[in-house]
Length: 152
Image (tube, rainbow, N blue to C red; front, side, top):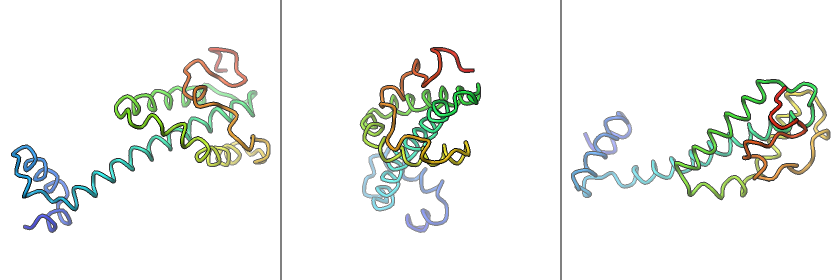
């Protein structure tokens, strides 16, 4: 079976073969084209995961800010979980550190629209630009319009 055929028909086998070739130093047998595509895809996936977690985190911070009377422990748990998971991603891949600040403006509109949809509030009830700094968003001690340490 050729490398391309194996890649197309048995992905796990292809991965194992590529790892084996790398370990053996058999670089001529590497499927460079597909291998480089896979590595590029992994990079995009890490950034996408970080952006998605930021959206969820900002969405919940917005809900807490705009509907403090409806905040729940569930919202607080979601904020804590996303902060932990984001920090783990950043620890495992330090080159992702610029991504949160660089994408905040981009992800904010999505978080804002989702917050409006989830709360039933008009979109204009949420600030047009992100009311939180990236430092606040990632700060374990920061809770908008919530007494410090009080989640509901």
